[in-house]
Length: 315
Ligand SMILES: Cc1cc2nc3c(=O)[nH]c(=O)nc-3n(C[C@H](O)[C@H](O)[C@H](O)COP(=O)(O)O)c2cc1C
Image 1 (cartoon, rainbow, N blue to C red):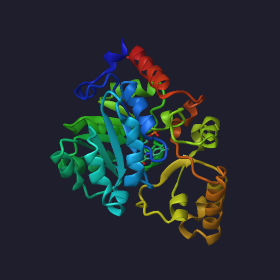
Image 2 (image 1 turned 135 degrees about the horizontal axis):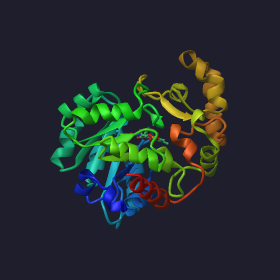
Image 3 (image 1 turned 90 degrees about the vertical axis):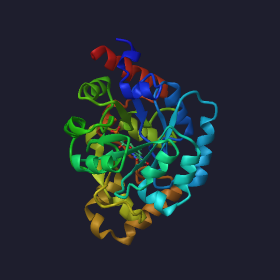
Image 4 (image 1 turned 45 degrees about the vertical axis):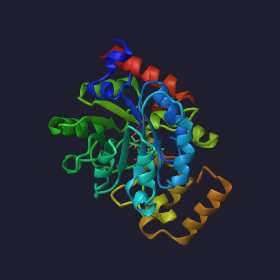
């Protein structure tokens, strides 16, 4: 089975040779990273996370100039409300797809459709999927609790995917813990139109991560990817409480996670000092349970080729 035989009706409709999309990871998936995914045959997404801004988007999109193939942009609901120019700037950039995740007001879908852009959002339950479909979302991302970064910790990826695929008339991408060829083959066999890949690509050479962050990823195993709100509380970020983050446990999580609801000022001071010093024993490194499969720092194209040819062989 060749890689092109791995393609799905959805990936073909976008002109992709591989049915994979990189998760729009804030602080990780910049323009160079997205360009590498698109060049490799997937859909490259630029991620604007909690620190997203019009200036940051423009800076990252410059790397996509002249890249043959489609790209997408991923946004966070509370950030587009804080930065009202961000969604219009993303639309004006003319991506094939925009995702907005972690919100309940889906009125942004209409603005995308007016501009001929596909709308995607991450869903964490069948109820979420119904709400998104009712709002006209074109692509559902079934994101299970194994996933890295923020998300609900409700249902594992496979049962979530199967339940959503069973009654969704729109394409469904699988997300959360997909890090090996076997994982990808299982997701496609379960009816996914593609995979939305975060952790398994995050340490690639093209990502925006620093060397200490990459090293922390290589050293970690699945059990190190814990779920906590402690960094969001310490930074005072308005993440909804039902979307904690999965990230690598470190000195800060060990010391303060249990005190998230009554976090003392000392924790905030420690975190501020760590930001100044770039201390990665304290700062967060977001990653899901697939982190154990990340054992080398490689180029995006290499990881995707191995993942997809392996899945094609298995299928
Ligand atoms: C480092 C990192 C940063 C992330 N940042 C974002 C983000 O800014 N916006 C978003 O919608 N999702 C973000 N996510 C979540 C992903 O969209 C996705 O749910 C997750 O990566 C899928 O699971 P996996 O990491 O096991 O592949 C992030 C994930 C990681 C690992």
